[in-house]
Image (cartoon, rainbow, N blue to C red; front, side):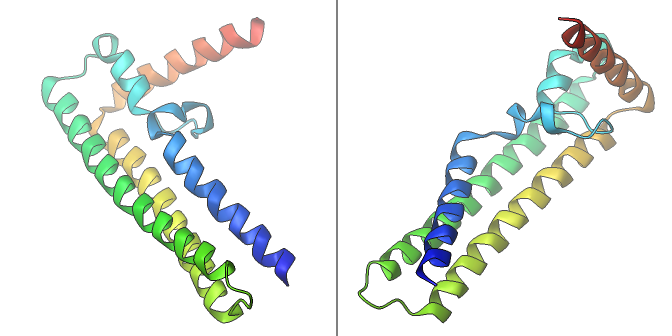
Length: 148
């Protein structure tokens, strides 16, 4: 059972590190083709004719997600710290450890849901034509990288 607990702690700490190191702006490689990263939209804003209002809406969304991500990250860190403190005891209360692990994983799940909703909201800000243009840009970029 200790092996399970230590594995769970490793997973939780890995999630915590992932949250700290990765930004939604850096995950464009993992996006479904139907969604666009804020980085991509920003990089091609002139080419797709992004309006100042659209740009402001996307920036507002980014700021909102950043605040939410920081808050959830702090909650995950608190849960991880509590788990590490629990594991430092000579006898570990397994139900409490399980509860702490479960809460951390629930927070991580909520974080990922928020990120996808954020990308959906960005897509909904864009016009159909802008989405088409970004898809074409992405296709050209992928064609270039596959040739290299």
